[in-house]
Amino acid sequence: RKEVEQDPGPFNVPEGATVAFNCTYSNSASQSFFWYRQDCRKEPKLLMSVYSSGNEDGRFTAQLNRASQYISLLIRDSKLSDSATYLCVVNSPTSGTYKYIFGTGTRLKVLA
Amino acid sequence: DTAVSQTPKYLVTQMGNDKSIKCEQNLGHDTMYWYKQDSKKFLKIMFSYNNKELIINETVPNRFSPKSPDKAHLNLHINSLELGDSAVYFCASSPGLLSGNTIYFGEGSWLTVV
Image 1: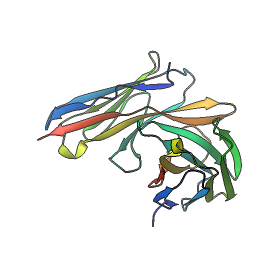
Image 2: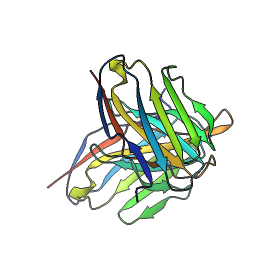
Image 3: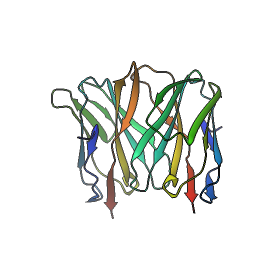
């Protein structure tokens, strides 16, 4: 089982739609969680951290379910500019330190 | 000013050559990383350094040798390049080893081995 798993997509949605991505992780001792966005031929950039109580940033809502070991990202009112790959990132303990483990990413295409 | 900068951005080289990629961060971070993103877009950690000390080495071939002259710099030297080394190499940094820190990436170095 991969340490962090995501549905690769692509998710093709019309402008204005609501879309949700899930991500599961295998290490129950994982401490912190993030969603990153990666545009084509660019570096990954932080979209938002994910907190235990869930958190929202404008049209984006992130949730964490520790019991089931998954995190989610909800995008409301999708814009063309939201088209990108969304990477789930889990910070997990390993050999006395922490390691950022990336999922393979979920590709989103917002269509006009 | 770019927070994490790496050079070169593009590199095309022949099999068997030796090449280096340099990385510098001006964020004052203690921890730096090298990640490799292959053709399937999977981003995988290679090395992690904290205050110039190697913390993580993810079973990377010995042909890859990172060097951190100070905590603001982490360079990657690759010997005897192989076709399979073609990928995008991302340098990154974070404030420290504590969980919860955000990781910041450089723009990537596109390596093509022919």
